[in-house]
Length: 310
Length: 174
Image (cartoon, rainbow over all chains, first blue to last red; front, side, top):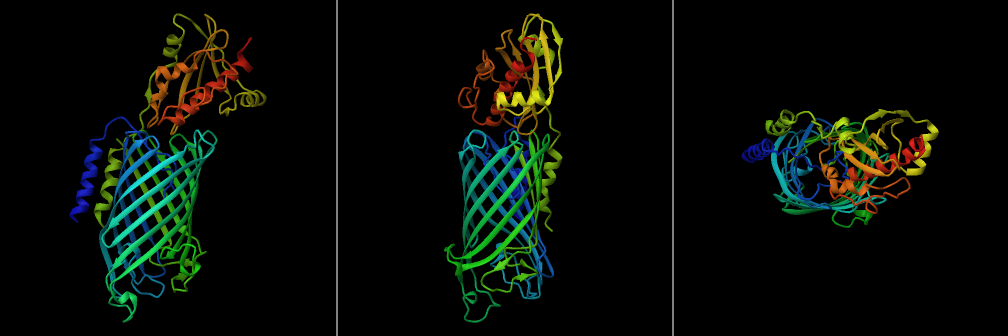
């Protein structure tokens, strides 16, 4: 509770001290990154809120908060310091009707029919983006992204290749992301697991996310852009992304995005819905009506990004 | 639901004011600055489809508006006002041409962007002086890029090249 107040008030204080000169890297998408970065020596604050809701049954909500302060080290290299904190509530939400917390709360084991409610600082991370090619001066924009995250019982290393191509005086933006993100969780014993199973003892869970994101956005009026995003997310057990026997889940999301960019402020809102095209390669009972409801998938995701330029 | 999650968005909505454009020069001020003591005869034109296509072909830049806002200068030459696409909004600018069609001056009239205001730098704008239709005028090649203001500098470069082609197709020898 104390750290939430600290994060909130420190960010608000920063806003109130914001200088008049505006600088920006500006995300026109909610889930897909572009190669646009902050100019050298410029600073920006971003606040993300991602709401994930609707599981197979019962009640489920996950609200992910992300505070981000970014700095332009050079015109082609941007660093960000990030704090991630989540709140969730779940009750009898899994396909089998048991209460199952979302992935960030994997170390919690509520009773199968209970109502689960928790808030947690998930971790802190450092994000770097290096632009190799600019979409404004090269045939296509290209950037590489890395983000190590460290949390309680959790580590993740997210890497991403970002491609961007602009058309119509740079008003139409097309972007593609390819993400590889291994994560490690150090889990306590699950009191409800089968005796003798791995989950019934202290264990280490390694999983790799491999995602593809595609998006298009058009600036239809001064300051306003609207577009569409598509995400394919694949979960792989362990590190071996090419070993088909280790593939777990595969889900697809798509939906609209709208963006307003002003002189000192921007806001981006994106709503995605999972398409009924999912697969669980391990045969686990997490699919219902074609949608994957494993711990890291849900039916609806809505992301709000707010940014301020210092 | 935790109230803390809504603290920052609420603060943002309170703090975020309307976008305020920064006007550097009015049209009249830009005219006086480029052609001191001259008078200006308004000579606006509407480009036909064929003329717009010819200008796009010659300049390689998109003709977004069919209205050509041009003034004939009493001391010789032309004064043209146009705009190019910026990151958020359009960037209005003025182009002064000598009687021989070469660039006398370029001035940014208004800038509403979050960044890239360095394109107002007189030394950067001076790179266009003396250029005529047919000059390549490509960013990073003939015209130096401004790091951190690439989009604005690219579009202004394209805009000047397009207006030089427009002058050659519409205004020259009139």
